Length: 216
Image 1 (cartoon, rainbow, N blue to C red):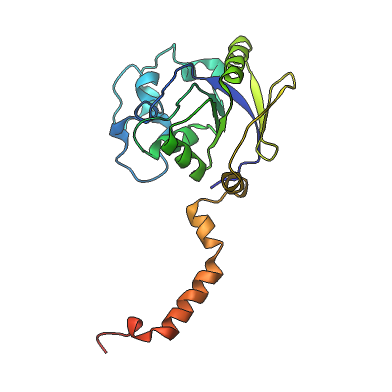
Image 2: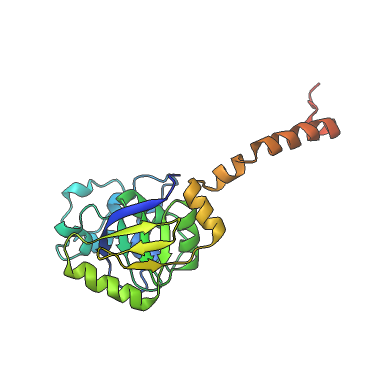
């Protein structure tokens, strides 16, 4: 996965609490196990006026003109500002895939659904947790100023506003290292490929009967 270090990104505010994973990517789109193809269906029932189905050409679908991601001022946003308990509900990794493919690289909220939070870190999506008053402040600022951007620095664990105010956030060391290195579970495992190969070689020597050709 792509490493996350710093991001200077346009912010889109989603002013709703308890946004669950079915809202992020509705159940009818979960038939694929591939990580691509979900971006056009992010928040599908909120973005479009019709009912979405897999394989549709979303460019031809009618849009809800009042939904935040359909507003011209938020096109190209890479940071999603959200309310408490974002990503609650069922444990679908597709929710993170949809957010990432749409273009979001960071979500900022007061709290998250536990499984969503874990899935995000394993797929390169940074989830920043800030206290509710700080989130309230950011909502006021982003809604008041078109083109509002934030600078997110993972190494410094900081979010910097346009006027220079720095908001610090906490993150587990293991998760921080994973994101900075751009390593998913497979990548972390492959870092020990030498040890794995040594073990397999030793295992063949110590237990050759496990690897004998039963047809010989």
